[in-house]
Length: 354
Figure 1 (tube, rainbow, N blue to C red):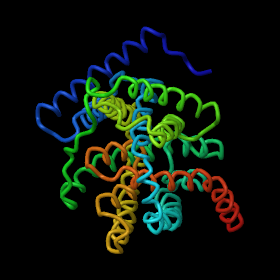
Figure 2 (tube, one colour):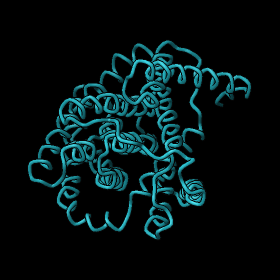
Figure 3 (spheres, rainbow, N blue to C red):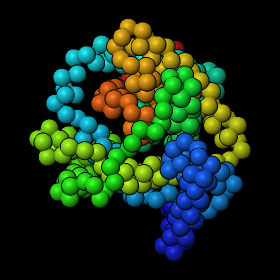
């Protein structure tokens, strides 16, 4: 039976986590480093995790922070975006091929090179939502700890390197205004955003919607945007708060990691990111060369990081949020719907060969 953490101990751990994350944010801010509210907490919590400090994630508060990004995406869904959908069709059609190549390369990579069992190898290779892949994989008999570390490493490295790629190779500036201050936004729109965030999140969970904390608020906010009730993104303060808690969540995922896990599992995740990076670079080049999208948007659309993290980067880089998120949604939907079916087929085939 799992041990329960005493409330005061849990509170102390989360207070320490918050303090370290705030310190990391301050250090990044003073040094003028990029995205201090995302990378500051992430770096501080990652260092604390590797140092075996008694830190703890923020639970539902971190999940609630993701609703802010769902609202931000939903607010960008306007009639003008629907007019652009036919232009996106060709690049969206590349997503199934992208996923297929990832599976054909990733599964043997984890099985043959790193010695994972077939089920774990499959769900480790799939670029779906982190929580979804862990849940589906665990139900299928995969190792949940390995899946957590592989996908956590994937998100960590991609989120860390993506800004460097954007600035060095695509000459993007990560200084795009992320939103207006709360004081400058209409009170009624702020109230509608809060309502859309809460109702969309909890309603999505009750309906069993995957990624409910982002997709639920996104759907409701999109309806409000299309209905001409909302005309702006969430306030700057809210988006900065979302970055802060997302950064903490990435770092905290490595709490309790052992040297053996670092040497085998985390190293496997780091090596796999190179594979994913090469595939993403190829598809980015195809989209940009064929004129199917701008290079920055194409890169963010095919970078297999977390949906929330890519949303943050799309906002700060000034990329077309609709283009980026449409591609990520297609990837995640296809993986979530197709992964269990594909896993059964692959495992039966591999079993018949053993």
